[in-house]
Length: 315
Image (tube, rainbow, N blue to C red; front, side, top):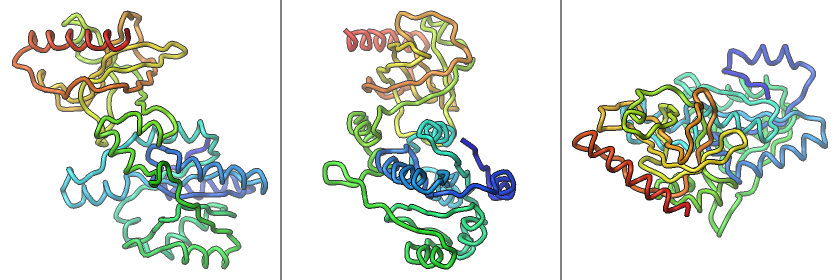
């Protein structure tokens, strides 16, 4: 998959792939849930019939994140199902040919719908465009499906929308999945995602506190984006072709004065050196919230209780 990073790289894309035509879609695609996958399936069918390449356009940061930061209200930022790097990896797995990282900034915020169409979409070799039925674009969200259709007719681009994808009588959406995850309802999240909720990353060196306490951990640094879960969880971990069991803490480690979020995973009955290896962590059940202990001895005592809880879960 080829990643187009920003408006400034559109010309490079056009020069490198001048002879290809695309079928495109636009959205946040946070989680790449079953609703998103329905759009990608429709794109795949059209791509095969019309010899087109699949292009997914997504904004980074999300518009809500941008507006929350601009207003200084961090708490208003919605949590991410996963960071954009994981989104790109999932797109690759789903056989997307091109993804376009479109930076959401003050320039994009103030761009009129007409300028968005002429200065961005028209330059991406698009022959067909498929969007969700609620898609809006341009300054003040003034652009709508009707405007897209008339623009499409003018430029010989076929524009269509997908029907709302529902499960149990309700729309499948990233918001619905975030709500399930904040309630630690991993079963519902899995049903809507079409796969288990996981977090992937490479194991990095930490401060070795776990080893000092007799509980070595694999540390995965978390992105600056707010994630929908925090606390201590029973987990399954995929390491290459190995499936391992463990207990994990996702948080800032307040007992030792931590400030940056990190995912610490203690793997049960496992002692290999895995620094630099990629882990995929599946969250099964929440054990407790993260808390600040009065000292390291109290923390160590609780960690061993958590490990015992995890071992009992897997029996």
